[in-house]
Image (cartoon, rainbow, N blue to C red; front, side, top):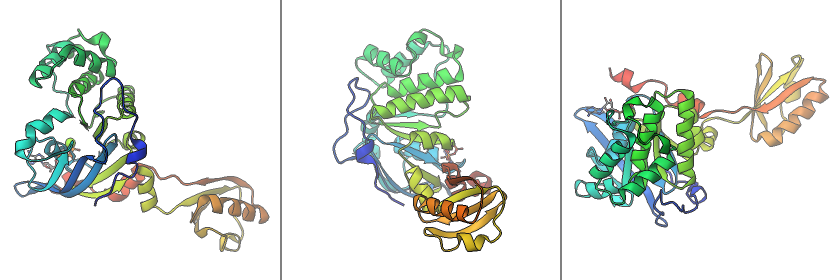
Length: 338
Ligand SMILES: Nc1ncnc2c1ncn2[C@@H]1O[C@H](COP(=O)(O)OP(=O)(O)OP(=O)(O)O)[C@@H](O)[C@H]1O
Ligand SMILES: [Mg+2]
């Protein structure tokens, strides 16, 4: 399933001044993935996956354990060769010869930070900057530490840092090379709510600066909060779009009406009201299927008052991204394969 980045133009942030993101080439996509498939022998990690990600977009990649998220990141990050299909990463065609060029333009923050625990934060970053063969190392490190609010911990040994702080060091490392596309593989996995919120804040500030981010996550509220668009993967791509679009695609809109006493003849009151397509009783009132809640709600209120009902509340039912996800992912791929 392919979809154009619907909000590409509006979501692109202003060019930034401190150089944490490259300016986006006009009209180009940061990622173009076409019919990409990866198999390990008989096992299909992901199959026939197609999508585009615009520059400046934060793109969420959701799916259950074993859905193929990490394998997709590793494939687009040139660490694995796809079995079939094609992709363009940061404007460069994905093929073995282009591996070094792609790697110089992207960063991957893997699920486990992979730092040298006996080295300090600064020594770790110096070490990785050396491995990446970067210039202006001191300046890059200072800027990356500033971006993750870790300047005052630069001389601490990584082994002495909490999980959340190590995650931040890993994020600083991923920022060293000014990536055109930043892949974050479950950046808040295993973090407590406070540490997760800090990482969310950092991702949100990168989003503000126009950094293109490909974010895999199990945390649906994280995706809902941070991502312009999300894709739901379950070996194949099931759905792609803005969270609110996905809700509208999967669920009809409805109003929850709470009243003090049930109506004596609900059919006579509710049937045929403009914008109301159907109704069902709930313990505290009625749920009405409606075409447009803004048109239906006043009509419903008037009809209920006319019938002598005491209205406690009328509210539009909100489906979360979690509802969308659970509707689509009804079984764990990993469990099915075992
Ligand atoms: N190197 C490998 N060799 C063989 N099979 C692999 C390899 N890497 C991944 N797989 C398989 O590919 C499938 C997708 O794995 P992947 O790690 O991409 O899932 P995921 O969506 O990242 O899961 P999780 O949410 O648990 O991180 C799984 O069935 C996994 O066992
Ligand atoms: Mg994974």
